[in-house]
Amino acid sequence: MEYYVGLEVSLKSTHICVMDRDRQVVWRGSADTQPSIIAERLKRWKGHLAKVALRQDR
Image (cartoon, rainbow, N blue to C red; front, side, top):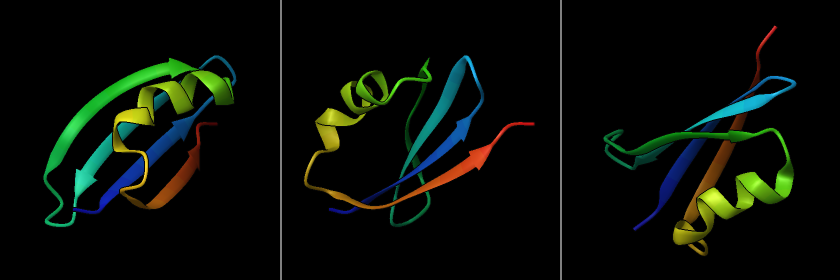
């Protein structure tokens, strides 16, 4: 199954939303805005991510 990720990025934290192809939310969470920490949060979907979208919080 493919999953889609939305990231709302700010300087200190990033909110993460993982959805399936039917737009059903399968997980929501947050992480410090550091690539390694965000990658750690998403590792359970490794190999199944179809698209990742970024939104910058202003």
